Structure formats: structure tokens, C-alpha cells
Image 1: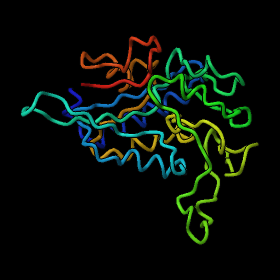
Image 2 (image 1 turned 45 degrees about the horizontal axis):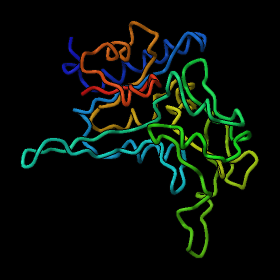
Image 3 (image 1 turned 60 degrees about the horizontal axis):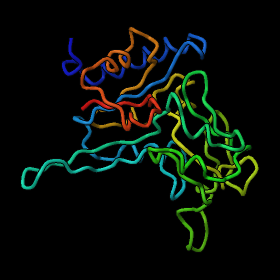
Image 4 (image 1 turned 90 degrees about the horizontal axis):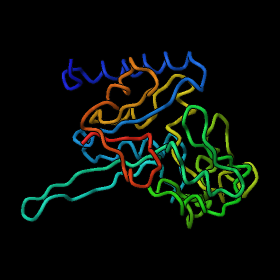
Length: 241
């Protein structure tokens, strides 16, 4: 049965089943991947909003922007949308340039940042060919108002633990930040926030090492493409076009 013939709730259930099956395996035997169908993306930015809410992102820190592109020649033009999370590269240039060994690749393919080790040099931001990293300057949405509400000051939750918003030491403030496919959700058996909130059901997630998974099926599609393959980074995030 073609994917287009399957009801959205059945697709999500299949991804959930794939996720539960993957979590029963050792970390090194699974590899998380994401596929985004550009034909189904409507540019609503629900994924961006849910990512900000899920990861408690401050101003200036965006893990999943949606980039608008105009294609064609006037007057025959149309607009397409490109959600751009971290590519979770197989050969990540951000890891190579980090002088503090603060950014590293897990056995399951996720690129993490150790906020305790990060020195805020931003070399990784410059090295990433996808502009998938941002820098946390410690801003609040309520800056310039009479007071900063407590909910803005509350810690964010990443990498399985809370990170208070304070200057340096055990804080994301002053550090580089990036998408992790919501690994804190995934390891609890929950799909990434961007996947569950996509109104066009354009984002798919799962274990690329599981030949029975939906994500493995999509990775074999003739419509598949990866961004900037000429860079040699071998991105795990891919697109259907």
C-alpha cells in the first residue's frame, strides 16, 4: 500500500510502533533519522512553534526554522517550504572544530552539546553548512518590560536533564544550541514535537537501521534528496521532493 493511501493516524501509529521496537535494541544498533516531505509541507510553522514550546527556547534560538523558497520563472512561479532541523550528519563538521570536545556524536547518530564543556567560541556555528546551530545570549522575551515572569526563567529540559537559565556553568546561556530530534522525548517512547504537531503530516521519524520501519521505507524512495551532499557531511535528515 502506498503511503499516500494510509490515513494520518495510521502513519503516526506505525511510527510509534517503530519507535517502541527501536528502543528495545541497544543504542548502537539503532540510528534515528528524519524525512520531510516538501510536497506536503504548507509552511504553517507549527513545527517551529512546537519546538520552541517543547524546548523552552529563548529569543534568537531556533532549532527548526521553515525556509521559504520561490521556484520557477515569472509569471510561472510558486512557493515551497523547507523545514530545516539539524541534519544529524554522519560526518559532522561541528564536531571536528570544537576545541573543547563539547559537541559529539552519539552511537545512535544524534549530535549532542555538553553545556558544561562548551566555551561559547561559536566555531561549530561557523562550521555548520546548514546554519543549524544558534547561540544563546541569555535573552528573555520580556526584556525591556517591568519584570521577567517566572515561566521565562524556568529551566529548559534537554538531554534528559534540566538546565537553569543562568550565566555559564550548567546552563545553556553563553553556549551553542541545536536540534536533537527531541531525544529526551524519543528515549521516553514519544515522537519528536515537530512530528506530532505537523498539520500536513509531512515529517516522519524512526530507526533507519530497522528494515521494517516506515523511515527505512522512505529513505529508499526515488524522491529522496539530501541538502548540500557535495559538502560530504552525509546528513541523516532527508527530504522527499
